Image (cartoon, rainbow, N blue to C red):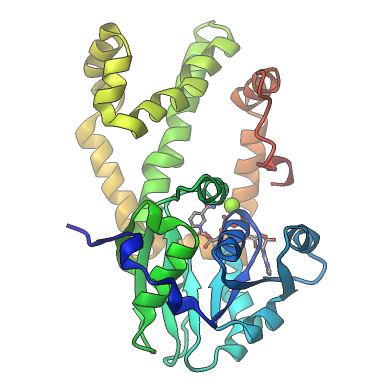
Length: 340
Ligand code: NAD
Ligand code: MG
């Protein structure tokens, strides 16, 4: 059983007198910076000169510095820029200022697990990884709740790395929901696995396949969108609330019977599991990480960008966009997908 921590196990006084530099002001960055500030911490945001986020962060009442100045200023330096640019930014703008006794923090273990960043021995290295999108980390905090987090310590130079990590997580509201102890290795591997086979890769392919099957059979694309895409959230909300039992309670017995009869037909267990194991072993032996690093470095993101463009033009995205526009609550205005 994993070790769990809650607010009573976290002592915010471990952040007293410590300056926290949040590098990046995206999904996670804005949430960590604002939550920590509201928790009474001394926070600044580190950004590139000319970043469009500079004014946003200042408007939200945060002090902003260049990445170098923030790294110089901070006792805790939290890396909340894209994983694929972290190694270069670390080398050029952060490492020179990581003096003994400081802490380097992450919300995902990729760069430590695959040795793209190798911090000096004298600093604490910890992870405070919310298990949810940054916008939810902020909205739940404001509502007096929080998003569950993972805590891990890769290097404990000061002897207080765990206490500092737990205090940090309490500061962003995560300890209100629960903090699970893990390692950089386990977090990285399970996170990559989850997003690839179930949450993003698996789910998008499942929805696309369902959508295309209905449309090719002559049904209206709007109908296919509602059935195979829109309803996913309604179903998942029930599972999130009360497990599969709550979903089965809420759907009709006909739907539940269909679940038992057809689920394993479209997702043959042994074959799917063998494929999942192959994906997992690519993650464990570094094959996936190597491919992603190469995609960014030598390939100029050609595969990544062409897939993104292809998806943008897919009928399910176009039909869905039109339908969502006309829903009474409109689109999700805090998600700026146009800039992707
Ligand atoms: P994001 O893409 O939303 O934001 C990244 C920010 O970094 C942006 O403000 C961007 O302008 C800035 N940036 C990019 N390159 C930069 C550079 N060279 N110098 C300075 N700033 C630069 O990223 P995110 O999704 O918040 O992810 C941040 C970290 O949090 C990653 O390690 C990610 O794995 C982790 N994480 C994300 C989520 C999530 O829900 N998004 C959940 C858990 C963990
Ligand atoms: Mg993002």
